[in-house]
Amino acid sequence: MLTIERQEIILSLLREKDVVTVKEMCEVTNASESTIRRDLTELENLQYIKRVHGGASLLKKKREEPTLLEKSTINQQEKSVIARKAASFIEEGDSIYLDAGSSTMELIPFLKEKSVMVVTNGIPHVQLLIEYGIETYVISGKAKKGTAALVGTKAVDAIKEYRFDKCFLGINGIHPEQGLTTPDPEEASVKQTALSQSQSKYVLADPTKFGEVSFANVADLASVHIITTNGLSDEQQETISKQTTLEVVPL
Amino acid sequence: MLTIERQEIILSLLREKDVVTVKEMCEVTNASESTIRRDLTELENLQYIKRVHGGASLLKKKREEPTLLEKSTINQQEKSVIARKAASFIEEGDSIYLDAGSSTMELIPFLKEKSVMVVTNGIPHVQLLIEYGIETYVISGKAKKGTAALVGTKAVDAIKEYRFDKCFLGINGIHPEQGLTTPDPEEASVKQTALSQSQSKYVLADPTKFGEVSFANVADLASVHIITTNGLSDEQQETISKQTTLEVVPL
DNA sequence: CTGTTATTGGTTGTTTTTGATCAAAAGTGA
DNA sequence: TCACTTTTGATCAAAAACAACCAATAACAG
Image (cartoon, rainbow over all chains, first blue to last red; front, side):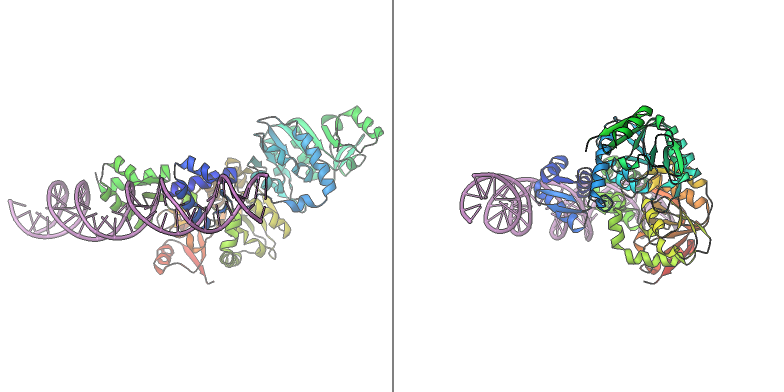
């Protein structure tokens, strides 16, 4: 086996596994430890990898993204719990629409094990999805300042080219009579289109969203499953439950 | 067997396998090691292949395409200089296609003052563009692992819906005969489409790209303006200049 | 046909790569 | 902390691959 081949194998092993032991590399390449070690020192000099005792790891760090997550740990934990529940509905091989926004972002780590296909309009989502090695498609559209969500007629048209088993949306307002609402009409259109292309429809919302009403209407409560944590008054909970499926996850 | 035949076989073997041993080449061509070695030295001088101990490999290719992070730190200053030059061609109100990759990323800060409209297939670009308050549109497509570039037929179709005054592309290989090349055929298609929709076509490339050949052909040299820094041999510079506009910016 | 040139395969000695060995260093557990 | 195990880097001899050279053959020009 050629040196370059071996090194290529080592690199691809690392891309898959993050850390690989010397023994593993020996087995895969049928080379001796000495040879592997020489390869490792070389690859390290070339800044492709980092050696660790017993093997090697990628230079690149996967632990990014804490800034956005660390912002509010309380809210974050809440979102994560909601996301975990939402993830439990996902089945192997599902095609999924992931709406822009921080709530749906939390869902991504849970997608890793299931081999799903994801379509999204959230730019930050794409980076994270790729890091987790998830098959990701992005719709076209105008990038909205602030949230980096893709919106506009092109976005709407692009969504129409897909069919989803499940979609997961964030939302700003949930109201017994006004239904689901969001501040930006353009984003509302995108959400509506995503809903129309999906078999099962899930909305991720923390309890503060209940009772709120924003400018643009997205959909009626009846059409979606809402996932939230406890924190609702019994009264609220009952009113909503009459109209739609309400999943309340304990913190 | 004719020399040319043999060399053609070697090249096609390499195109299939990336790396080939001398022995394999001997078997396939029924030639002696000496002969194969002579062929290899010749092909290497012609910049078609790269010799490695025990055989030969395609010029760089897979080995390269480092992650964005590595790229951005390495030749960052060089890229910035190139980007500044590229930006000088941009006029007020232009509609621009910005190719994925670190070279074009450097262009973004220079776009702030000119009120341009940007279409891109680079996810990291979008975040930066939005931060600078630039009107940004994203094309649809599959997000490619590693570079976070959007590729595929959807990407190609999406680009066709726009017309650009100018496009700015990154590239992996620039070769007098092989033209502009890049490792991923899917990305090559995207670049080709972008070129076809653009009035003026610019390629941003540091000097290391010259003489390199990657797997997939993008375009001939003649069709584009190439912007680079000094670092080319006079010989290279002359060869390229015969075929196309070459802007060499001093560091 | 003859002398010249180019191309080929084999041989030489040299360089590079490899696997084994072992003492030193690093990690592990009590 | 101190033994104990694992991993590491250095060294060395064997094997592989190399460049340089040589002779034989094929292609060519006059």
